[in-house]
Image (tube, rainbow, N blue to C red):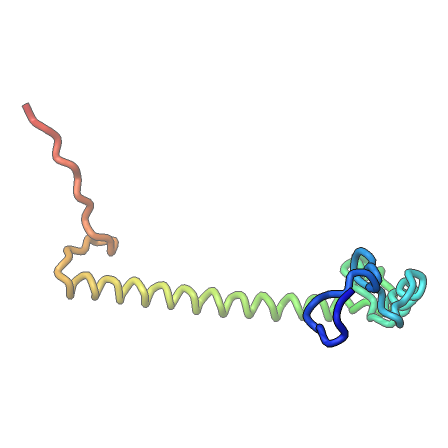
Length: 124
């Protein structure tokens, strides 16, 4: 038995054994309640674009074929613009690398690469 003023020693005789695992919350939902909430949320979400929407056989909630085609055209235009910007950036990088090689005294070939050093074979 421990002294009444002793607050450092644990009391093993009068303590309850704690159960295994994470303790349950008092307001925890049951499995059925969680499933019902999930179904309600799922119904309130907008419907996903179905495969029939592309062919034009979709329901009234699916986007029209014209909307899809205009979206595709916008994405193609953006892709073309980004491809051109990438091409310009790569050309600028190649020009800067070439200028750097010239400034550092490295010989540059016609293709913008330094000449390869071929290994010399032993001649007999």
